Length: 434
Ligand code: CTP
Image (tube, rainbow, N blue to C red; front, side, top):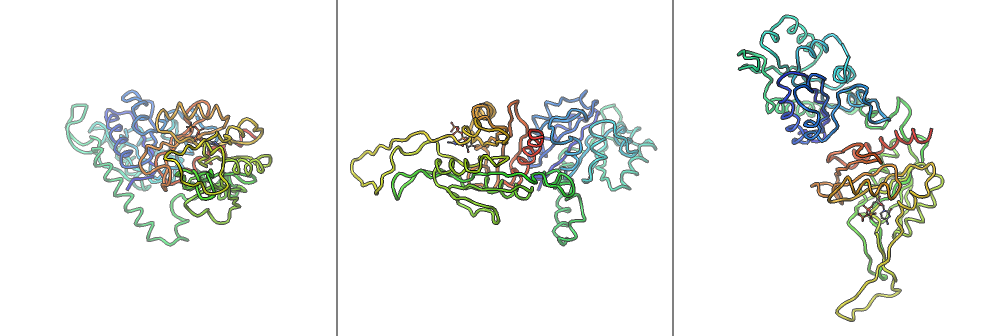
């Protein structure tokens, strides 16, 4: 139910902040992409590291800590959210929300978002029943904010009464029910109606499709994308290849075109159909792919090497079918050109994105590859993640630049991964080229 949902979890400074960790963990386990924003007082109760480890995403607390130059964090998060949940919510944040104050990362994001908002209050029983707090909560409810009523019981301050944060399990259930209803509503809506609900256009913008109303993120850019697995001939009827389906490269090509780029797809062996309406050159071997890429290289702005290029090819390609003779047949292989590395060392204005399929030490190997091949970004496939990688419709990647991880993209459709990867690349290209 929560798979792929982007949930912003705002944690504010009450003793129940520790339950925010359980909540974060449960939401993540259910497949949600959780981004935590903590207030300064929340950090007195629980560390950022805990929430970062549980959500597997960077934790935000400072409005001015801008890590990704291509986006403004609080706007980016606000736009990308499917739901903003504040839990636990103190009387202070409720008051700020009711009065439209925005003096930190959480309150600013809450004002900037058009996503649904849920608030789970937690505070002392007298604070909870104070007329000011009651009135603020009523204001929020009248604006469509969903309140998750606190439970009754022994409060941390020693009082028995209402004010205890609802149990994380129950909050998760409420969220699941909410999305279930939303999805049902959405299915019932006609397509034309759907445009006027929610924040589809701002989401598209956050997802990197739009810079502004009418300027696409990759407008005017020429993007070359390689896809599939190369075929290295042994003889006229036999060859060496790999498991690459071409799906990731095809998704990148499709999304790049949606973002306004002029796309040239160069595909080797693939098991799926290429996206329609995109210029496609079919190639077989690593050598052919290299030649095809080089023909585009001078005039292109970005190359995304999503192809699984064979590292070796048979030293000799037999002109006729190799006949069965001895019990052992030795095939001598020679190293292929490393296309990405060669491009990396001759690049001028071009932006270069590579992939790295790894099974262990992902960060170390990925950054090593990025440096060795002199590319600008590398998307490391965690091939140990179930349902992701070769042949699958989904992927999970970690995007690195020279200084470390830029973004961790949990399992989601290859198109979604492509969208996020290209949004980052496009943002950086702007910086590189202007
Ligand atoms: N690549 C390439 N030419 C090759 C091999 C790989 O252009 N001959 C590109 C791939 O398209 C990918 C990146 O390099 O974008 C990393 O590929 P990968 O197979 O993970 O890396 P290798 O350099 O082959 O390293 P290793 O197999 O040792 O992990």
